[in-house]
Length: 184
Image 1 (spheres, rainbow, N blue to C red):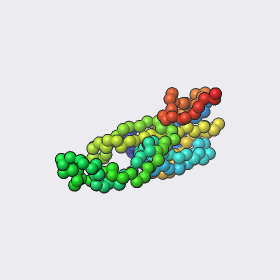
Image 2 (image 1 turned 180 degrees about the horizontal axis):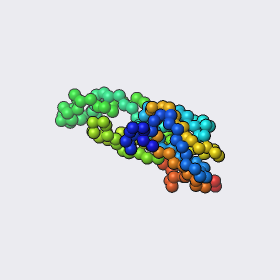
Image 3 (image 1 turned 45 degrees about the vertical axis):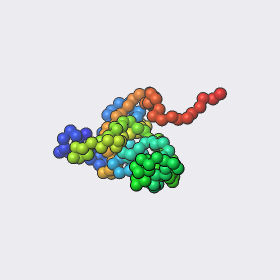
Image 4 (image 1 turned 90 degrees about the horizontal axis):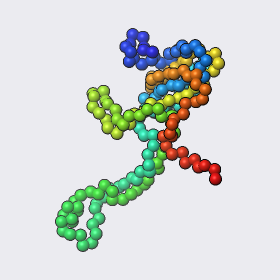
């Protein structure tokens, strides 16, 4: 719903109460992200508090191990030709010495959408600056008629959907390898 006095693209005000549709709904799906790190948030379903961690909209959701390097001089093998010595003796080798390994990780978050870049306020593109939205599922208690959003200006709730499906919505394929093995 648009903010009072705002256009169709205005954000929903913080702490707003949303009236839920009537019917036999079992779950709410919320599409959201945080603008300031992963944030704990309390939603209220019919007065009952439900705590979620709303994930940050940017950064990485996974990465391989990453080697960290100390720059230094190029080390040429004995007998290197004169041309190589002249070209490399004054240059810095950015990979002269490996000093550490930053471990890889997978952020196990309910990713719903991503973009490989985003645009700044001035219209310039930020390539490889990933953006995400996350999907959260809330069991709807019997008789709940309202959803109260958290009062936190750093949270962005993009959509709320009431669902009456029998089973939970599941992705067709996992985002990452689960390494689960079948029993022999």
